[in-house]
Image 1 (cartoon, rainbow, N blue to C red):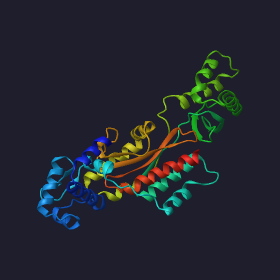
Image 2: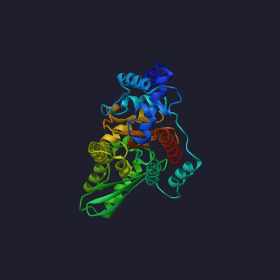
Image 3: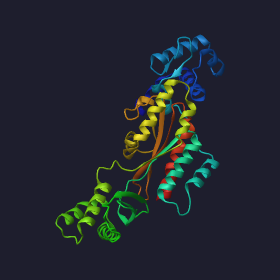
Image 4: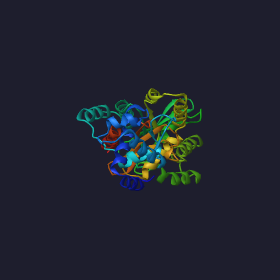
Length: 352
């Protein structure tokens, strides 16, 4: 359901239905267990008999918001019900000063690079939320300030690229085994002269044309290094690398073999990275915190897990990445949503 649709459904529910529905979801988020009408009658502020509560729960079940895992059991929220709750009834809290200080202290640090800062932010978010933390590191799309090639061993070189905003990206490329150190320096100087002040995408075609026309005074080996480097840096990149921390947290809530299978599928998706990068890239066209619940999203159809993610921006207010958490569908949304939102804004400030 869309957010507006959910708000419409909430407005159509009477006070009794909303109160019972809220308590069923609260009980699920707290314990993961179904709750019955007798237990609810003791919790509600309304003076309702168990029979009246059962009738309301039956109506909510017919509406697709609740279900009974067993014939004689209480009720649990469906994924649609949980989505409705998060969109229309959830009262989002705020971070404590201690939590804010903790996140700031773990993310900030003198002399650390962007990727190390993102790793620290992801680990901090994972630790505070009790979920797996993940972040899509920035894409190298802006103009470069510095580029350097460093020989690692025969056939491999490290390329260090620094953007104008200070983002550092390191990549390893294959080089001809017979390439001399002086040829690598020559390739670095050639690229520096043409790339500084321009993005790789902007300069790539012009450099390749120059090489093809043999206008550049480079020998064959050096030209091959430049061409292969450009192909790796600018060709077919899904954009940004994925950093994941705290996967073990997902195993703590496993209660059945079926749950373990869901977690195993999720781990496989995280290892492949393409699925998560695709999900995270959706925030490029969205604003604020995005919430994916269970199989409710075609992109994130792994039942039993939810993801809360928010984009972060650079100093020019451009979305350059995203950070968030993956956890069980019964995660503490009220606490974790503001945590993800604050961390995304903190990362944006540190990068900017």
